[in-house]
Length: 220
Image 1 (cartoon, rainbow, N blue to C red):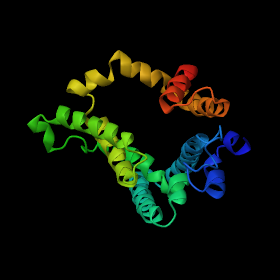
Image 2: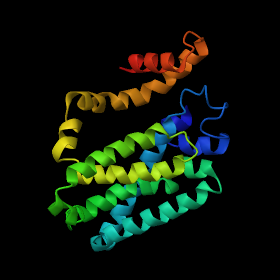
Image 3: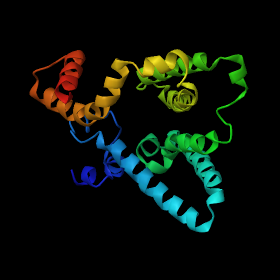
């Protein structure tokens, strides 16, 4: 509870957990707070970094973020073969997932999204392809190939941001079902796991489908 409240649950679970899906954590109602810990640590680190760079020279900010993102990615690739818990839980090896979005934001104004594909009018197709690949990647997140699928999901997300405001993808993502999903997704995230743990402990619901349906209903 203490580590979750102060946003270092990811570090706590790195030290005490055998794996994310291990039996030692399957009944921990605060397990999902590890990702909020990574997120908060990223924000704190980034704010401090931006402050320092602003004092030194703001002209190097984009290059520094790009360099840190590449270093983080290389570190993540290395640690996945050495310690998957380290690669999974610790912010320095997760930085690149946020960093690619920051790099895109920095270079978007310099023409990064306006590549040659625009003259071929294939942006809607790229957006649809990225959306499909994201869904596929997330659907097989527990698969042994999840390390590679993680890269796929992150970079397809950047493509979707770059070209997703046009054509069919735009209409799909701005439709009512997707807007409702966006509205309630954070609530679902915060509450789904504790509810699942309580339901599993009670033994009222047995099948995975029943647990998920009950958890989502309770979260909403």
